[in-house]
Every structure is written in C-alpha cells, then in structure tokens.
Image (cartoon, rainbow, N blue to C red; front, side, top):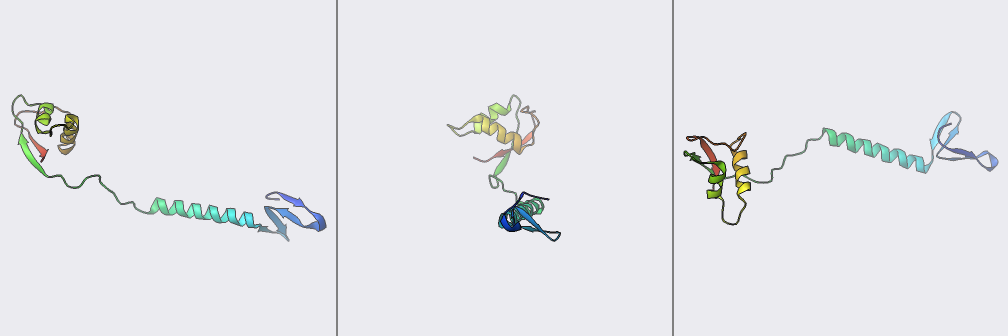
Length: 117
C-alpha cells in the first residue's frame, strides 16, 4: 500500500493516501504535493526551452584607430590615453578586448582600435 495508512475506528483509513476499491485517493496534503510538483516541473520545462535575451553591460563604444610606432608597448600607449586618476590596467584590458589581441605585444605599423576618451 502506498503512503502511510493507519486503520482508525470503524474501518476508516487516514494518512497521505487511502485505497478504495482498487483506486487511490489522495488527501488534501497529497493533492497539494502533487500540484506543487507539477508546477515545479512545468516551470523547469519552460525555463529550459524559453530563450533569455542577452544584455551587455555597455553600449556602443566610440573608437578611432592608432598606428603603432617603434618602441610602443601596449602599457605605454594605454597610459598615454588613460584619463588622470583612472587605472591603466583597465585601459590595457579594453584595448586587448577591442582588438582581439592574444597578448599585450604590439608591432610597429600595426593598426589598433582605440576607444575615444
């Protein structure tokens, strides 16, 4: 017999489920559990198949280009365009991302995209 059933006075069964002539009838608590489980499964199914819109943290960035000169390093160039009081490493990271650079190494004659400040 499924669930916990206890025989009470006069042959009445109490518990989470009671059987009557081969069919199972749920108590109010059992129905609530089934309803919550169904709602959770429905929510999980919808969240898996529904698309989530992508959100970027920043909008479009105004850019210009710069031709790397002999002796330029990414750090030296970034420090020359970083506003006073701001972190040069953030500018370096931005330049690497904007230019899809694998490293911070630059070559003379290379054109890089630079955010306008």
